[in-house]
Amino acid sequence: MAELLLQMHHGIGRRVRGERDWVSTKRGDVICVHADGWQWGYEECMSEHFRVVCFPGRPEQEYMRLVESAMLGDYMLAKRRRFIDLDAQRAGWLRDVLALGTVMRLDAPERRRFMQLVTDRPVGIVQRVYRPMALNGV
Image (cartoon, rainbow, N blue to C red):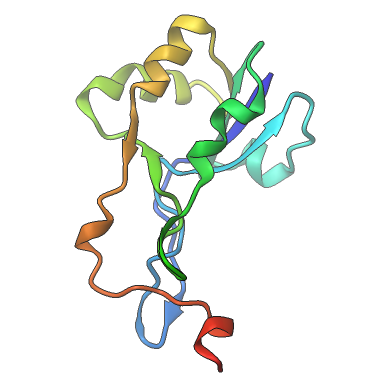
């Protein structure tokens, strides 16, 4: 069974040289993917900022594309290339389910509906790209 940690709110984000850090995680980002039985911490299980979504009988490798970063060469454009569009009108069912608790188990029909909410992040609108300090030679 795959278990995903889903961020429910926009992160505060860090500041990089006085500008917004585009590499912070956002609402709808999958923070990490683990196999069944992962020992989630207090923050993941008890916080309003995260939800654990479990998919019974599915391997974790099936969901690893949800944690890929959006890159342009050595530049990171966004922490996650894809996100779950929790604000879409068609995501009302998921918002209702996620409001019930912090650990959710979704069966096969709900899993298909969940995967239909996966959206590519529009990185073309990013005005500033972030390059890790090690690559800047600093």
